[in-house]
Amino acid sequence: MKVSLIGFVLRRVRQSLWRLLWTHVLTSGTMAMTLFVFGAFILVQANLDHLLKGWGDQLQIIAYLKKDVSTEAVQRLISRVQSFPEVERVSHTGQEQAWRDFQTALGAQSSLLDGLPRDLLPASIEVQIKSAHRDSPVVEQLAQRLKDEAEIASVEYPQEWVERLALIVLAVRWAKWIVGGVLFLATFFIVGSTAKLAVLARQDEVALMQIMGASEALVQAPFVVEGMILGLSGAAISVGALWGVFLILRRQLSALGGVFLWTGDLQFIDPAAGLLIVAIGWLLGAAGSLFSLRSFIRTWKPLRGAA
Image 1 (cartoon, rainbow, N blue to C red):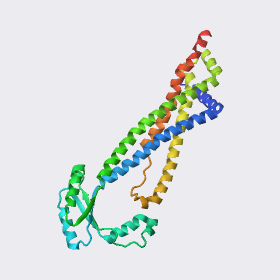
Image 2: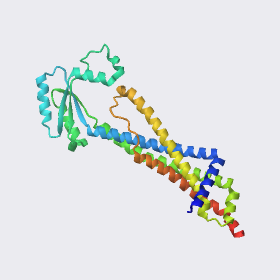
Image 3: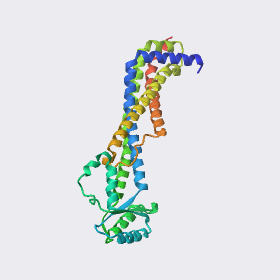
């Protein structure tokens, strides 16, 4: 396209954006809300994936010891458990250490423990499992072997929670595209309607261009560029809103992390996901305008024949 034609298109875009300012603002806002919902699903999925990976990498069985177990008995137990082929490492946490760890986890809320006996929490051993043996049957068999040990009162392991979290991640992944697809389709038609309004507002100009022999591509170009601008602005607003929500959530989780034992850092969407949101916004704006205009502008074609 010649430089003079590019300047012509850009002037038409500027005039249209100003003439239908509030219509374009509402359309861009609608696109921003759609992309924000889609980005929120990506944000949730990214953090659930991060949490799931952290749990998987640190999968361990916690065996709580009975009271009054001697130090020698605990050492013999640790040696026996360490010899299991599935076990990578065994560590021991005494009652005093368990109390201090719990105080640290509560943070500012540690005063809730005032008046409680310091031997309230039982001693325990943490059994780290080798990565090659982290499937459900092996973990369950190891947990059962630990339960049969005389020094152990109870056994806990997060395998069931890991499996449930994996199902939640899968559900979020599918919901992202299903809900996003419905919203994208609705936004597609909204952008098309905005393009039609822009054509109606400039129908005399469009008719004159057709009479003077302007190509269909040149007639459509300003409206498609408008759609691109709306899509990019909506994507930018949505990413900015996601960043604001992310900062608020991170601050809140940091304040409440002691109560809910939040041990991971909240993750923002990666650059690839941000570019995906921008690309979808750009594509929605361009495709919505182009699809609507292909059938709509052709209603002026008879004017060229009459000329």
